[in-house]
Amino acid sequence: SVGAEDLLGRLLPATELNPATHEHDPNTQHQAARMALSSTLGVIVGGPGTGKTHTIARLLAVMLVNASDRGTPLRIALAAPTGKAATRLREAIIAASGATEGGRAILPTEIAEHLTRLPTTTVHRLLGPRGPNGTRFVHDATNPLPHDVVVIDETSMVSLPLMARLLEAVRSDATLLLVGDPDQLESIEVGSVLANVVDAARLVESPLHRHVVRLNRPRRQQAGSPIAPLTDAIRDNKPDDVVALLRAGANDAVTGLPLLTFVEHRDPNSATVLAAVRAAVSAPCAASLAAALDNRATDALHELTGVRVLCAHKRGPFGAETWNRTIEQWMLGHAASTRFYPGRALLITRNDPRTQLANGDTGVVVAQPDGTRAAFRIGDEVRLFAPAQLDSVETAFAMTIHKSQGSEYDTVVVVLPPETSPLIGRELLYTAVTRTTRRLIVVGTTEAVRKAVQTPGSRITGLTSALASAHP
Image (cartoon, rainbow, N blue to C red; front, top):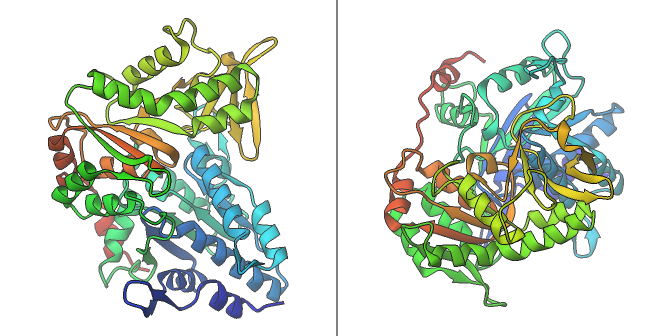
């Protein structure tokens, strides 16, 4: 069998060709793997499409070969803050495991099969919540997790209290890999742990200095995609560039269909705005409704990933609740007469140990002969629940940008509030536009866009200074 060192050199070469300069540059993915292989803590960060999950999958392959050479099994845990993010992590690991080059599989067959069998879960489920409110866990310092390697994706979403519980539960001799994008919105709860770790690691005297690697070369965006330059301009605080890119728009080079559209309007109820949003949401919502009425839960769930309206506010004319009522009216032809109607997109808003549904899980209501059921994907299976089993759930054709973290959609409609909104900011806009995999529609004014780009989020915390000066 191929050795671990040879496999690392083949999967993640130390240098790579820079297409812009035609010179070989150091490969940050290789640096990240080296760092993680030589330490019990690795932090791998980068924007969308920079190869974070690709790096993790190949790093785990090397770790598995290492363990095999030593004759010891390697217990791996893969987790993310929400069920949706955990599902995306599993899909990405499976895709990376099956990658080919020149028609041949890149990973050894037994290693690829091992990776594709690894389950993913939420951080809460990994720790094993107990008690009615799910804030106490089975695994802690006295009963640590059995895993040798623990990978946490979308770490920017992990709150400070939950990160503290996780650190207590990871064995001191295990490897912890934290992965994410520090430029996204911080956790909706207290703390901005990933951003604090990255900030502290910039200081040479910090014990974290050699434990953080940033991946910065886009690898996933299709040629000609307008999303990468837009997100770069937002992150780099270039409001003129952001406005210019939005106003220029972009169309698919092959189909001619729009990939980037700016609906420049102050009134969210204007005919122009309503027409643009309705055109974007109608087909996926209709397809999901048809599948839901036909009791095809898997198809209904899949269709709903086609589009999402994202709002800074929950309530008011620019808010998710208003847009949900509007989309329901379009889809049903009338206002919803019952909460659990077939086709309703669902979002869980609180962890529930009884059902194993976690905050952020998304589902859909489907029709069955004996009534309606709520369908959710948990791991590899779709599970059905009676409406009475769901305590904390809301409609999710539209949702707040905060609650969209960890999700991806084919088409994203971003509804910006006026520039006077206290919620508007750079991380909010960055997070919203990076939820799309293909098409982006931004609704709002240039004043709101400029205000968002020029307003960084507040990271006032004692954690950064503590991490910068802590002893290793």
